[in-house]
Amino acid sequence: MNEIFEAIKKASVEIQKIIDVGDTGKSENENSTGDTQLKLDIASDIVIEKIFATIPSIKAIVSEEQEAIVPLNEDGEYLIAYDPLDGSSLVDVNLSVGSIYGIYKNDFTAQNIIAAVYVVFGPRVEMVVAADNCVKMYRLFNNSFEYIQDITLNEKGTITATGSTQMCWPDHHRILVNKMFKDGYYLRYSGGMVPDLHQILLKGGGLFSYPGTTDKPKGKLRQLFEVFPFALTYEFAGGAASDGSKRALDVETTHIHDTTPCFFGSKDEINKVLEVYKENV
Ligand code: F6P
Image 1 (cartoon, rainbow, N blue to C red):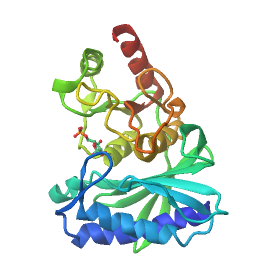
Image 2 (image 1 turned 45 degrees about the vertical axis):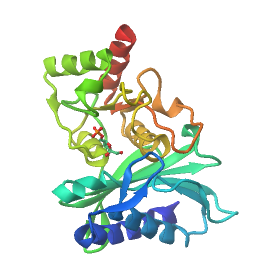
Image 3 (image 1 turned 120 degrees about the vertical axis):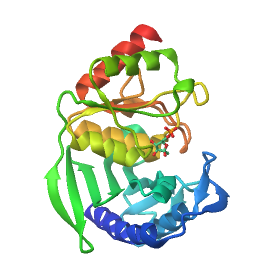
Image 4 (image 1 turned 90 degrees about the vertical axis):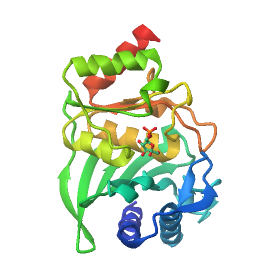
């Protein structure tokens, strides 16, 4: 799988250049989830696809920015689902954004994800690789990624990050969030999934939640490109991930662009979610 990690490093160096100087305007297209694609999304997607197309071990890829699976090498072993530039609208206001990659075998289902990578483009560029039951972080220096540290979560954290608008939260979610504030949690939410989840991982723990809402009962975040890669990362870091009633990696996928409510955190916070949701749904 090493050649895939090297390909992601190469693509990230290119994407950083696109973020630095690229046009942050809208394109005329929408992706399959109905978001207007930015020119940055499209440019990043092209970079990744071109680089992945040169790797013989990749059987097929699917991008959050594209409608369908793209076959690459019949004899390849790996399938990759990726979000080229998650939170790209934040580039305009100079907040951090990120790329997310889920590496699967056999088919694009939670049971078959075997590794995950995300890259944060912020004041620094950092790549986090979840594979073989551990999570390792690398940082970009002069076009090359150097190992910095392993990441492990504490049993309990101090941060809570929650998506959507309170107007659309179901009551049980409001109860959960209020309980966390009463218990002393700090609110930290940038609107970029990658930096928000990265912060929780590096600060030792906490909770990121994107619940099912009145306008999006199945949540907003996409299973293959966002939820499963981070669920694997949190589990390998010693935390947990759920859809509010079961393990996130037990969620079934019926379509490549399916979404699900999702919760990622230290074990203590995920137990809290399960408890509050069970008592109040
Ligand atoms: O996937 C898109 C995304 O921008 C995530 O990066 C982020 O966590 C979420 O949407 C923010 O959504 P909302 O503005 O509804 O909280």
